[in-house]
Image 1 (cartoon, rainbow, N blue to C red):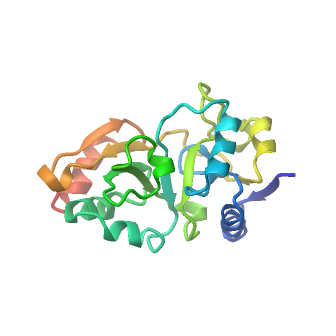
Image 2: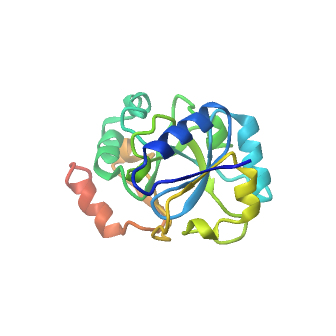
Length: 212
């Protein structure tokens, strides 16, 4: 039976439940900043396969790895170049996915065919402080809209998860996806998907850290 937890009144119970579920190799429905997602251990092939079955198919696309604490992503950040580190500091946490160079080949199950690139996020909100990184994809059947409200998550997906965290109504906006894999080489970056953060806001934030 799926464990149901709400963030209403604070996120301590939800954070603890998420950490426990991920450590046990389970699958969770959780609120990101804009849409609901499915989460599991990014190093757990069986749990990732469960997520693909819940979504209806494996579309072959890479998935982001989400962190909820800067401390949890410290080891990852230590291996990044100086400009990439500056971009991470300037832009995260927030409704952004940064595609960073991944020379150490971390989280290959999330990277899929291109292990040299990794999408990462750092979330604030009620789950901030949880110490487990997660493999993340949207909590919908493939080809259908991603839910922005807990009551929009399909019953079949809720029933197939070990944990479901009710975060109420979210913004409905996907994260902006920004490729910064070349930023240390030549200072360039590219928006791969428009979302909650505008290009102008990205330029302003990066300029404040000396990144053009």
